Image (cartoon, rainbow, N blue to C red):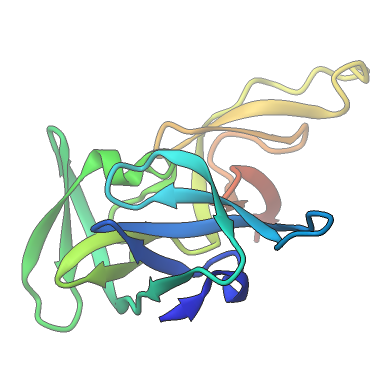
Length: 186
């Protein structure tokens, strides 16, 4: 058991049969009383985000997740198919678990899986990855009102704001956490 005040963002704990990942931590001191810990947590089973308040001194069950790597193969209706890189077995993950990551998931991409009791609770993409630009509007010379950026479409179908000099066929590096352009790959 771990004291609730020892939790920090990124930690995972178990409560009432559900797994929660700490997103934000805040300690509130109450005059003439015990402190209160307010956590913003993500339920790893349902994917919902909520705020939870605890009295200082409460203990929760910490959870250690098993980490492995896999290679993304393809999407089959509402299931994403992966290949375990150590055992070479194929397995499926619900697309709902990949919410927000699907636009940057590319065939052959190596991802990190986090499991709890053989159940996958999180799929993490590489932070930076290279993509081919499938479509880019021509740069409008003298158009400084838009800040020198335009929206380009990547090979996965995702749209990214990139500098005006990026054109169709260029390879660019993108931050998969927020979908921001990093640099053009030579």
